[in-house]
Image 1 (tube, rainbow, N blue to C red):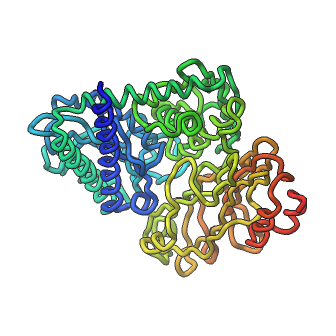
Image 2: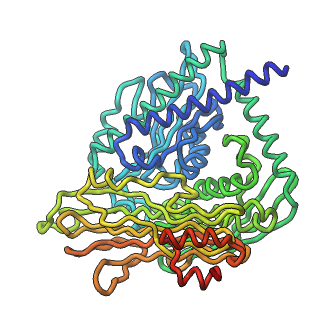
Image 3: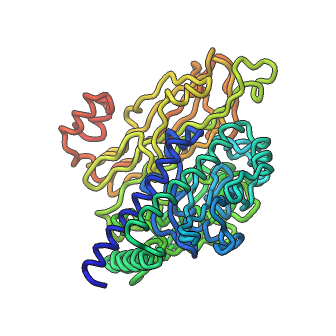
Length: 551
């Protein structure tokens, strides 16, 4: 390939990323669910006719993107590309064929040009409600967790599958939002297909094959080169999660080889009877992301750049949940995996890793009205999820970020957006002082949130919180971040369970103390001017500044 052809392929590759980013932005602009519209809990990408991901949108979460990278192959096994027609849209929320739980809808759409199928667009979005017990850990099988949609056509040659939509609406507490989100997912794939055709017309491309080969060859070569520069060897780490019935231990042994990285999860805790189990695709998704952040962060995410990362997940462990185990809140455990990967890599490339962070989102599903209080209900029925984050871990040369989602990447939802669609009031939302782990670079701060229903009415929270009994660890002499707390706003600060459905009594509010990130390095080596700034900002108390930093 000539230098000019290589430049042209690179331009086309960048253009393809712009196409899928517009695909994602179309979903954000048209989605009904606040989780998509406000938080960006979604993914979007383009695939070749073998189901291999060519490009993904920058907007989105790794748990969605990297598991969706596997899911398109499942669609093609049921509906081969040769059978697809213009206007077809296919959908599923199968946790083992999609992105890990029933609250994620994945839609796949073929793109045609001059009557010939060129590729596939796929997306995933988190929806508010899919029926069942709602998003929470209480289910004892996936059948209790909501409406289970196999891979089916939701549109056939442009015509809506009315039987499918009748079943969908009947199975949800929020039927209007759910149906609207399906239309949004289909529209965003159509937007991607339209832009792809324009791009191919502009460059006179008859197929994506040549561009796909360039993308895959370049990405695979660059990823293998990045791995080759790492120290060889086996590196082990473990993390503890609060779990549900009992604490969970995640163990990993990472083997860095000449051109691939293999992670063995032997020794990890067994399956739970509740919905904190992780389907294997979701485990692979966040494991790959954690490794890639350290090893090859600049290489675009696609089928080939993920290929050199291989996971060995023993049967019977919590990271390899088989059907029909409950998996509704698989993120609680799964989002700890990047920290676990960095624990391994800290022994190989210590200058590149972060300290542990709060990691798992604190996104309480809230519910109220007659479904909680019966005839005594004082507010209309509602179901809402709000996304929030604690502090991230300290970085080698910078402090951790406060109230920022890593590794999920979703945005914090504005309280006004939630209050606009549900009878909920946020009485407090502020950074949590003294929650950041001390260090030469400190962790990010958690948050304090106080949430009540309008009129101080009774409501419920389906708690899905972690990093309470097992706070984020510091690295290389850095201090641990503060563990989380969940309580009522009464005089006794009555503690609530960190997982499970609980009613907030009339006249009371839910108070969340989100975890802080771990610190990195000796706190006594921290720049005293930075300590003074945190004290002046009210983020570190004078007593803690003296105790931890000697300032």
